[in-house]
Amino acid sequence: MNIYAIRAIYLFEMARTWRTLLQSIVSPVISTSLYFVVFGAAIGSHMKGIDGVSYGAFIVPGLIMLSLLTQSISNASFGIYFPKFVGTIYEILSAPVSPFEIVAGYVGAAASKSIILGLIILVTARLFVPFQIEHPLWMLTFLLLTALTFSLFGFIIGIWADNFEKLQLVPLLVVTPLTFLGGSFYSIHMLPPFWQKVTLFNPVVYLISGFRWSFYGVADVGVGVSVGMTLVFLAICLAAVWWIFRSGYRLKA
Amino acid sequence: MQPIIAVSQLSKTYASGFQALKKIDLEIRRGEIFALLGPNGAGKTTLISIVCGIVNPSGGTVLADGHDVVRDYRAARAKIGLVPQELTTDAFETVWNTVSFSRGLFGKPANPVHIEKVLKDLSLWDKKDSRLMTLSGGMKRRVMIAKALSHEPQILFLDEPTAGVDVELRRDMWAMVRALRATGVTIILTTHYIEEAEEMADRIGVIHKGELILVEDKAELMNKLGRKQLTLHLQNPLASIPAALADDPLELSADGNELVYTFDAQGERTGIDVLLRRLGEAGIDFKDLKTSQSSLEDIFVSLVRERA
Image (cartoon, rainbow over the protein chains, first blue to last red):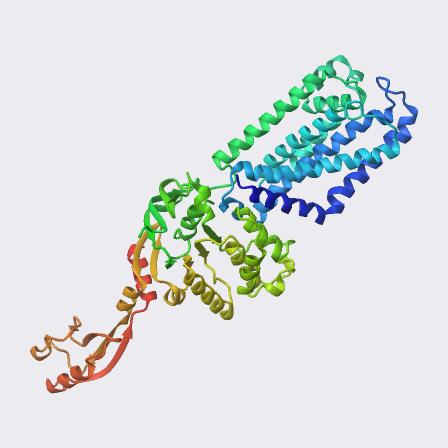
């Protein structure tokens, strides 16, 4: 195991985070705060609570997930796309590092970054609405699993993308709609029966539901199902990354 | 002695169907400077890229210090440093950070003393805290060399190290390469510049359209180069070389107007004085004369043209 290489890639990626502090930390925090102001304070005060939880508090887990997913994907995809774009990937490819070590460095850094971000948003949210966390360990587990899974997904997108447009395409056209429709702002029980069924095909529903359960003990789907689905998605991403390195897809001629 | 790099039956066909390498066999000796010459698109970079692990081979094997570069890539790559042709750097990083990053990537613990030495050797020490984007092209080239040397490789690949580099930097680089060789590092460089190969290399390989058409000691090539020719334009055409001159290395042109004498310019005696005296004695007059020396470039061009 080339620990030095994992460390080098990880620190390099984290250095990029501190260099781009405004873009990578401050801007998601500001946009999330705006959601709290609009949906939590302004509109939320006129809404009755959902499942016994005030609306302002209800949206906290969903908003954290929203940032976690988009930031994991964008951090990880950009992290691997950029070296491909400028050509510095040659060094990674010519180094004595295994695919696992490359992924550990890049995905580890992207996931760390979005977990830090998620925790910052959690603290920020506390300034706007009071809430409690019933199962803190589960909360951290969901945070970790989701950050890891979607950073892997982002890594895959970054390898697949051969221009900047494609890099934005999947987050914009797939991930953002799925997150908004995955119950960030509502319980899926509020939907008509037909759409409740359709929604169950949306993987993000399971993430948000499980995460919200760790806060308030209420969930749209069973928490076991949430954990299971998260692990399934994690396994799919791992398999895809494994195939990428095996075949050299978009990395090696 | 076991070669430090052994390439056997190496071929590469890209997805486009382009056959970049056709069953190449090549052995690089430990501690030598090997120059790989060839026109654009000949396969130089593909060959290097396969050895370094950037391109997958279609067939054949490469051993680096006894390790297969595909199956045993970790051991093989740890011994190799690569300076690619393109100047690709992380614009926002500092020189110190990017060179230290390379060392970690290649599995070595941090060693500020070594990094400092590499940067000083390459005249980069006063730039160590500069961001790469603020450096000139020549400085970036030095940084790429520093990155390649950060993990103390035994084998160094320089892909067109002096393309677009000014004369001063080129001389610096030559000096650096020699100093590295003195420490036991094997160096493989590709170049378009024949003079560079002449100046630097112990051995020279010529690659053309994916085939290695010549591998020879530079000394031997220089011997061939050392041969000069004296061409005499005769006053009156000859039917044949006179008997008095039969022992000399002379050739008569088809029309009988030119007499060509081949001699060793580096020898003690060229024999020109004797030849001219004999010509005078034989009553052969000439109206003009010229001497010419074939350069490595001539050999290269004629080799490539033969195959075209």
